[in-house]
Image (tube, rainbow, N blue to C red):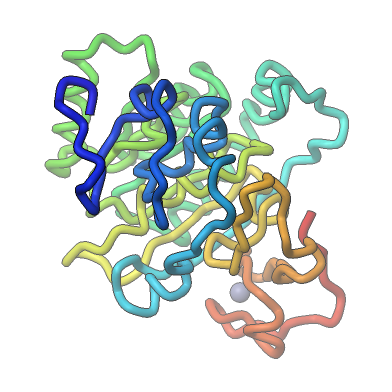
Amino acid sequence: MANHARKNDHAVQVASIQTLMNRDKPDADLIIIDEAHLSCSASYKSIVKHYADIVQVVPMATLIASGHLVKPRVFAPFTPDMRGVKKSKGDYDATQTAALMDKKEITADIVKHWVTSALDRKTIVFASSVAHSKNIVAEFLAANISAKHLDANTPAKERDQTLAEWRDGQFTVLSNMGLFIEGLDVPAASCCILARPTKSLTIYLQAVGRVMRPHESKSDCVILDCAGLTYEHGFVDDAREWTLDGKAKKPREEMSVVHICEECAAAYSKAQHPDECPECGAITPVETKEVG
Ligand SMILES: [Zn+2]
């Protein structure tokens, strides 16, 4: 809109957020926001407040049922105890979180469970610090599984080359710190290792979303949740009601109860599978852990 004569009589108007912030707001019946997970920022809020309600186009479960996304199989072999961790800027303190997560026994457990549940899947790891990410790579390499690390300080040329090698299948596990939350487009990736605890539902959904795109080489994806994110935020494909006032309409107790299989570490909804584990068939015991 900025460098073009504005024509208000056209039915569809396209504008950047920067342009729209400085103009009268269009008398629109419907606004569509690209990259809508950014729309909680102040700039978007200044626009969105002019409109009354939000349209929920299609829930994730429907996209999975229609084949536009693949079904996640979730394993949660380890859940960190975050109760003593400080919060800063709305999330867990990064230093404390990294100290909690970057332990040899946890990292070894990640590799062990990957071998059991996700062997040879093209895998992306979300780590809690640069050192943590490098230690995870070292543990995979020690198990003779090809792996590489990237972070925000990796030179652009090296980052591009590493990504191209991963895309080509020259190595299996790509671990990163602080990259690829959005914009990574490698649909053949079919395992996501969550090793970064976060209060952010957006980061969780964006991370898992990297491996949910359909591809001819896969029929599902594996989420190895070592960060307690399924407990913290619910299942990726749980129904969520989004609002414009930033509050969840649905009480947490209405979300799926997460049960973790003692045999295979599968995390599943007891409502959907009241009798047995969908992965290994182990009988579901009566006692459960609640989300949250
Ligand atoms: Zn099981």
